[in-house]
Image 1 (cartoon, rainbow over the protein chains, first blue to last red):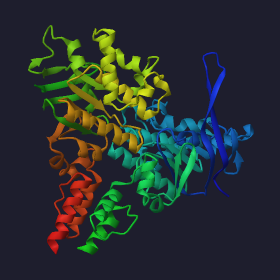
Image 2 (cartoon, rainbow over the protein chains, first blue to last red; image 1 turned 45 degrees about the vertical axis):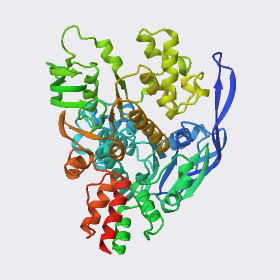
Image 3 (cartoon, chains in turn cyan, orange; image 1 turned 135 degrees about the horizontal axis):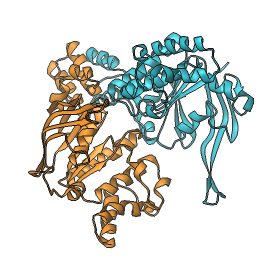
Image 4 (cartoon, rainbow over the protein chains, first blue to last red; image 1 turned 90 degrees about the horizontal axis):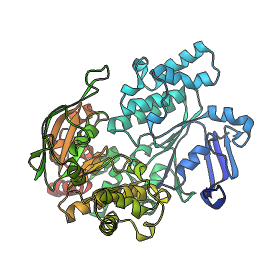
Length: 283
Length: 284
């Protein structure tokens, strides 16, 4: 069974005037069909305003569809009785770590989620320890979150979600505010969670380099899914991506540039190792 | 004309349990007209540093000279300094507040005491400079897209006609096209005017592409202050302090290890392509 499935998902925002009368409707998501199998790493790309974040908010029922259906682990997000199970299945991490951390001590912050789920106290501490270990922050358990770096804070936010033991984690631009090390820390953490805990990861990002390991990429534009495929399939279409205000990894740009200058380099290069190998063959 | 920081120290919450030495003995000179990039890990002191440049924060010790005059001396015209050194904060769109875009951009010059006609003239000029289309001038700033809001906010600072434009991560959260558009526009502004541009960014690729010189901050100190080539040659040290080199720099180092005789000190895609072609050609 799919962990996430959407069928003809439509979402409309109502525009209201000062008296609260509806003066117009804008369609943020327009007929999106997506399916994600358990354990997959799926990326969603798209320009600002393309509908990515609105889409993400449907995956743990922060928003419910205007039309169509979203199933999370087989549960319909429209069903009020399934709200808690849905949120427990799909945890969310947002862009700004400062908006997501509420505890005054790291371990208390991470314990907040499981406590709300009614997990017995001794199990909470076990989960806190495990999730902090999973994101590599166990040694900071007694620290104040205020004193951590951006990457560390974001890892604590991820630990807070992991402690609820979700099958799926949805991350909406988790690295946008981080420095290069912070970005690397978060990506390494996600990789570990996929490998060790078999967690399904849905990553929304503007950094093309972050998604070259994805199993599948969806590209959104004006509320539609306009491209779907593996990183190699997606990133070999440089011109189409540019049309959607996106880009390709710098390695791919360089490979493309060298090809234009007459070098024989295969299509769809994503990693620096691949480019180095191709160039060494020419050498 | 220049900005000169002379042994600047800054301590937050001095004398309390939260005391933090955010800038340590910073000495820098930024000559007029330069395009300077500032990089550093989160908490390295970048934002504290730039808030000194227009006197928002006052150094605990040391002196800051703007065009030769110490801004900490008594009677220094701070208001004038703040219009000459324009600061664009992170997520500047949160500071938009007026009923329409044009009025919002007029706010800065209005505070400078200019007449309504002059304000409008400057606002129109600034909006043109950031490439915001005329059809948006009468629209509420809250109806614009992320990239457009950001442009409107930058225009609000440009309308004061600053001599120095300081931008704190102006592209955070923007899509790749929005990122390129804003930076290209700033580079264009820098080219056509004699404005100094100081750009804080977490994107090593962007800094490498646009900056003439890079200042690297680490734990409140200036670690490097040099050309992109020279700074990114220290890529291993940069990694130790939470930074990195542009991706192409790593490719060049790998190629060299694999026996292709390239100069690894390149920092942009174009330089990398030139260098690879040169090295391959030489082989023949």
